[in-house]
Image 1 (cartoon, rainbow, N blue to C red):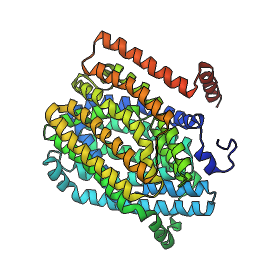
Image 2: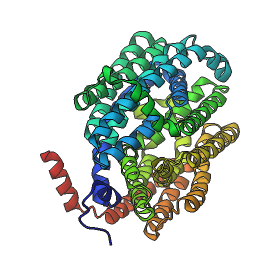
Image 3: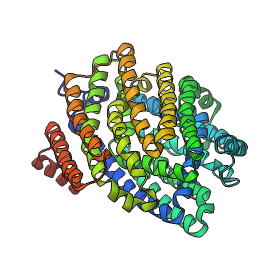
Length: 502
């Protein structure tokens, strides 16, 4: 039995109930729905104004800034959240204030370094990865995005670590809204030539909205950037090499995949990016609370094996129960989503999305477990597991796309995560004594069977019988999730009533 009235923040973190987790998932997920709707409009405009070729360029530029960010950010967005959450839960306000100044100083410095590297190596990256196929100077023009993203990562870490989740959500929504306006404006006026400027303006909009919020809570004081804070950053950088290596390996893997597909054409990169966006971007409603709420909470628990396993198991159950009916609904509505979000030019992404749906289900299981080494400062295990996954991901994509085209890329995503979950359960079971509980396994098996049936059903095509059977599978999955979560109609009505009163 757990303590029904935990007195400290750490105790509350360890024993959060379904209701507590759903509260934050609902809060951030509701905000995510707004972001998704804004993204729908933005992607539709992009599909019409710059087409598959332009979206391929956009995806490549985004992956490039991610790579330089991973190379230079020293893992600060992750280690910063962990440091701040420990001090927040430990209720040490002086150390909290000092850490905020330190994180900001180092984020600015690493952002400047990343921006300069991106600018200097722009032409080399274009020639090395894309055989010079990107428009001239586009990679140079987007270099400020690396700086903006680095600073934003520090501000987001502050809000996550201090559990200012509503403010973080607000910044995300407003930033996404302003990015929509500037993106469409550049696409309309400049077409494909406006892509790098749209990316710059979008990242700047997100940063400015975050700064408007965080500055009120923890004002920026440039005079506070002292030598002592520069030295204090060493504690945050203890994990830096491993985080840089893991982040760079992940970004490098994404770049290699895009590079390989771009040899077919940049239009195929656009098709891959659109399929990936549908599978990941429009289902991240479930995962958005992980980084913002779950990771700081897990970090605060520490090395208590029982409490840690309990927290991870609860998060897996929540993710699986919420994600499964969403995956089935996604499969049923895929043709309609392509028509609404893009146009007939992107119909080739349907097959990829169907076969990549297994990846989403496996991610619901893997993602909560992957936070264990991050929460425990265990950089070596984190790096090795990420490196193995990245190598498998690239290999499977090369084989899948090489033999089956875009559909094969979807198969590869699922296959890479299937291998990853086996390795993680073995390694983390040995190293962290992590075990899946019987109740968690039961939920995974039941929902896994339903999702697998839906994937098989739609992998053979979209017919009337498939739509009917898929709809039935959706209701079976949804009703099971509602029963386990004890979300009765009366309970849902009560939650909505409280939310509307606020």
